[in-house]
Length: 371
Ligand SMILES: *Cc1c(COP(=O)(O)O)cnc(C)c1O
Image 1 (cartoon, rainbow, N blue to C red):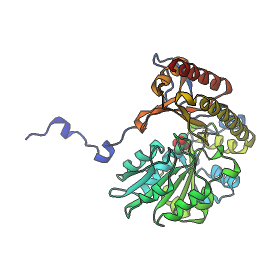
Image 2 (image 1 turned 60 degrees about the vertical axis):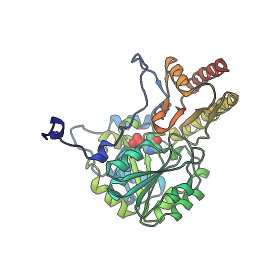
Image 3 (image 1 turned 30 degrees about the vertical axis):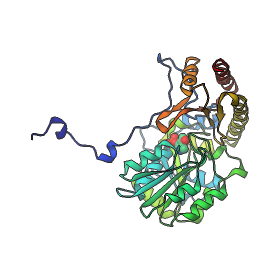
Image 4 (image 1 turned 180 degrees about the horizontal axis):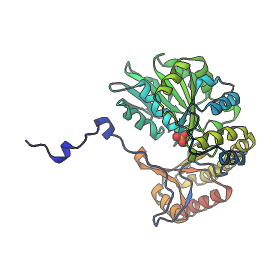
């Protein structure tokens, strides 16, 4: 048999070939027209004015950025009462989630996450050749017992987003502590707190405390959500020095840009902007959830959310896909995730009051028409 031309091309590793590329939220309509994006959990209030000004004065683009994000790590340590030596910054928390898998898992190992967990975990597990293991959910939320039941002697990493994307679900500190206590000490628990700043102080899940006290907990956070710096790609993680050391060895050497480092330091200082973003989100989310709950007789069910979006389930005559199309027609892109086993749900980012009114009106009209 002669080799076909395809066989002579560079061959991807089989575990890489099994990856489905991450599908970002839509930013244009069917006709390519720009739409209002309620599909990527960006901050509808934009970015802090302090951060914008610091970005403008960041420095010369011909110079490499500080390779260790030194000022940013100091500012993070100060803001959260952490040790800067236990912090690593990344090109978005995305980079750090991937490095956590790559640093501690490989072919033959297992990486666990919960069903309807963040889509990046599957990619992160496969990228390093590990086997993703999906734990069953509990009504779309994280089920600690189900996660623990998936642990085997091959388990190396467990990913939990808290609050979780795309469901908005959340487990309290007692449950997170129970999850950690149930894991073998050589399994890395990654607590992804991308939406951590949307929680109130009373809702703190204790992730930082776990990461400070134990050798096997990494907490990740991002500047992409409440801080409104998604375009700059800045994330960070905290954990024991031996964990941070591994991530430092394999991260990109200049992984956070000059502009992003300057913007993030200033964004951390603008606590007023963060507070108003949190308050805006909480008020609009409450209003939107109530409006969706009032359509319960049409099979519409908003899942309880602690984040800056709501997953609305369409379990009656009105289909999620129909609503998705009508919203796009009206100029709003939301997130439909059939590929993640959610053909009956739409993840809708909390936007401005006017945007939420418009989205609500479209859904109300369709619900009444479908009755
Ligand atoms: C948005 C999000 C992230 C953050 O991604 P970045 O790479 O920091 O922009 C991480 N985890 C979850 C669950 C998210 O929803």
